[in-house]
Image 1 (cartoon, rainbow over the protein chains, first blue to last red):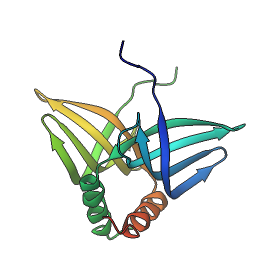
Image 2: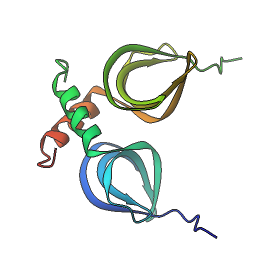
Image 3: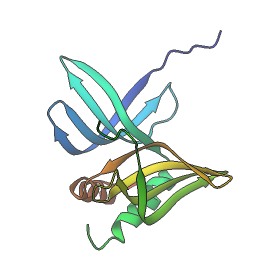
Image 4: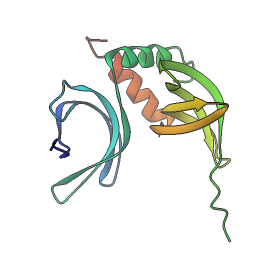
Length: 77
Length: 77
């Protein structure tokens, strides 16, 4: 029976984009289920020593590169 | 009875970060339920003229600015 347990590891904390109470929006490098770490842009809730993944998504290096270029091309940022 | 209908408008298409079949990961400016547009980083599935929002998150301008700086500081991108 394949393991359906879900596990993750924040391999590297890159940046906290914002913090509001016990919820933070972060860019990290995260390894899911033992696979190589990927960029991960997500909100996290941390209360009483418990950490909960909220909305977000992973980005390959190519996607992160394209995102960087897109953000750099924005005059309003 | 407050409206529970959910609506959105892609106000501006900023960048397609990747495309795989009918699913694309995009950075857009999206207005949700008539509120001012925000940056929106999300996967979308478009098939037979139907558009479906998948995993992603919105970013305030401050969060997008912080994300840009974080990505620019990465030597691997």
